[in-house]
Amino acid sequence: MTSREGILLVVSGPSGSGKGTVIGRLLERRNDFVYSVSATTRAPRAGERDGVNYYFISRDEFEERISAGMMLEYAEYCGNYYGTPKKEVYDRLAEGKNVILEIEVNGAMQVREKCPDAVLLMIAPPDFATLEARLRGRGDNVPEEVILRRLEAARYELSQLTIYDYIVINGNNQIDDAADRIIAVADAERSRVARSGDFCERFFSCEA
Ligand code: 5GP
Image (cartoon, rainbow, N blue to C red; front, side):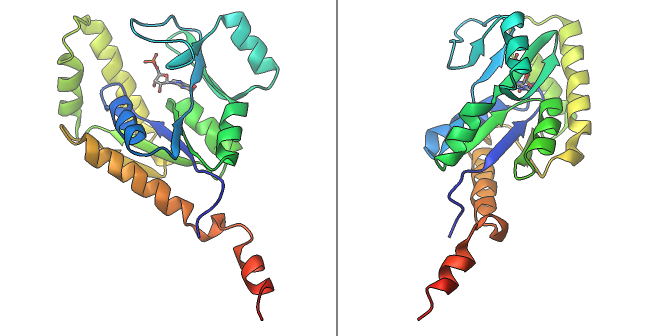
C-alpha cells in the first residue's frame, strides 16, 4: 500500500554538485517522477527552451504572479527572480506523480513551511576539493571572481543542510548511484504509514 498522491521532492545542491545531471538520469529511468518547470526573470542561456528549462518571463509578470498567489515559493538569486508555479505542482501530485522541485535553499525553506509533507533532499559533492575541481574544470573560461563567488555560495547552501531531510553525496562518476538513492528515498517516503490515508478505515470496515 503506498499513498495515491505523489511525493513533493525538493532537491537543492550547490553549483558543481551535479544535481541537474542526477535529476536528468532519474527522469530517464522513472516516468512516475516529473520535473517542475520554474519561472524566472533571467535570460535564457544557449540551448535553453521556454517551457522546458524555465518559463522565461519579465519582472512585471513575475511580480503579478506573486501578487496573484500563483507561486508556491520564490526567491531572488543573483539579481533574478526564480519561482515555482503552484497549480502545476498540485495537479501533478494529485495525479500520483512525484514532483521534483530543483530549487535553492531559500525556496526550500518556504516549501518546508507551506508543505510539511514535502521531502527535502540536498545533493552534495563528496568534499570541498572535489567541488572546486569541478567548478574549475568546466572549461568555459569562467573568471576567477565568479568561481570564488560560486564556492562561497556553495558554502552557504551546504551550511543550511540541517533543514533538509536527506543528503545524497554525488561522487565523481556516481550519477546512477545518486539517482538510485533519490528514488529509494521517494519510494520509502511513499510507503510511510502517515501517508497511507484511510487504509485502516477501508480495511477494517470490510471485515466479514
Ligand atoms: P540557474 O540560473 O543556474 O538555472 O539557477 C540558479 C539557482 O536557482 C539554482 O540553484 C536553481 O536550483 C535555483 N532555482 C531554479 N528554479 C528555482 C525556483 O523555482 N525557485 C527557487 N527558489 N530557486 C530556483
